[in-house]
Image 1 (cartoon, rainbow, N blue to C red):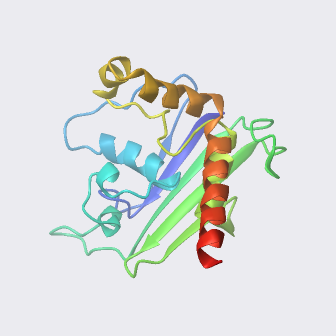
Image 2: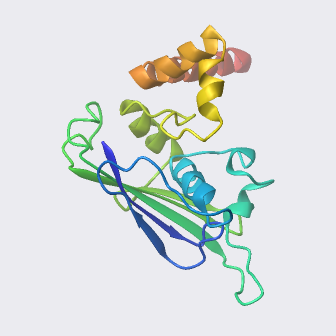
Image 3: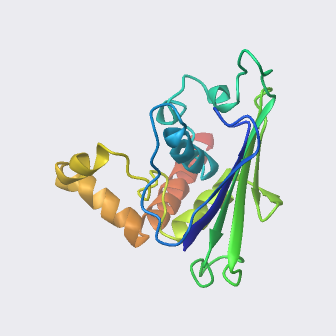
Length: 192
């Protein structure tokens, strides 16, 4: 599975439609301070389901919507589309297993409404998370490693490192489903 393109409209500093094409073998996004490098990684995190505004370097989720500048008005919506290629056979347990490319889209409106789409078909956040866990990319998105994270990963506790390995191995999908089932059972017991 490879990142093919990242399309952003109204996301953080990208007010106009911006498409980043990832060529095979790309290992880094380089540029001067303030050019939007971190916003690119934030966009990938966000489209794959990040729910914490703090992990996206903001105070509230609406901070991802372009807030305007001296020469531009604020926008009412942020949209990010991530196109993944070479995915055939990656998503074994889902209906997307036979596709060569998959497109994941997330939209957020100033009203607080949000939309999620897989191949332009409306879906739930849970569907995107399940799809990505099927591919071995979990909620903490280990595939995006910031500059200071490498040392943090190497010096972390064995339990935390195990979590990372389980996420890569695809075990987290089953642990998340187990936790969800236990939560439902607890809720049912409370209702009884």
